[in-house]
Length: 322
Image 1 (tube, rainbow, N blue to C red):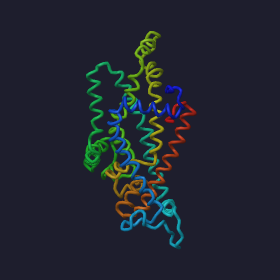
Image 2: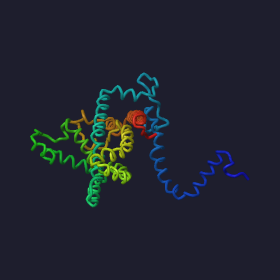
Image 3: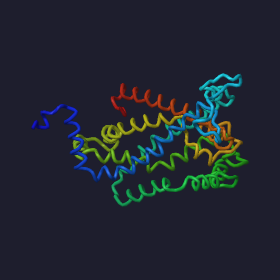
Image 4: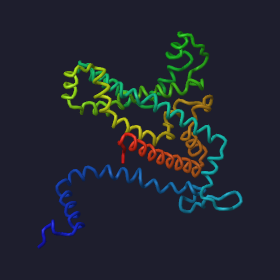
């Protein structure tokens, strides 16, 4: 009988897989619920994307609904995509989506890094744990509750509104009804809510730095700022680049849930984004094909942006997702 190493390559690979399954069958068993979750809730629903190319009718179902047809009777699978691009609000929706996403990205991403560095520099371990625990707490509070608190603070006589009045600002109505105030409130909410949670990955990256490197830098006469600049920041650079790549994929997918909990008709001009528009068209007006087309186009653009950002980061920093 031939030994395993003398067998053809496909046979050796199959044998390796079988051995791995026998050795780690408990781990694969634990992984099955995760696999089932993504198949049922992520991959199987992709079948419904087909309604973006149809004039979907609930009574007829996905398969029996007719393909998208123009008013002149001509079949045009891209009818709903064209209608969305030609809508008068298209450029406003794109501009708002990019502005809110980029504002949160540029202003929000440095804060977790600075917070992680400050925690790393603390010498009192108990105080460090308390601060880190408190900073993560907002992540586990319902978004509805947080939005209600923000609305209360930003009301006509709210804490934030009165504070701004005491600083000399002439505010006569709730802040969330002032278009110029919506973006700062949205960005500040994102920073406050995600500061501790987003800092975890940077804290882990900093913890992975060998302590001997810091000791060697101290021997060479480096102070705290020098060690932060030359050791700590380079250690979090790969994590920052990877998070930047993943964030670029969602640059048009601004959190619709967060915005819908805060916005109102008086600030639609600056707060209405692609996903909130798609929600109104799909769930409120029941134009499911049109809403699905918007979502599909948004996902394709996000995928392209991710590829572009990944290629740029790989060329410039030699760090990428793939």
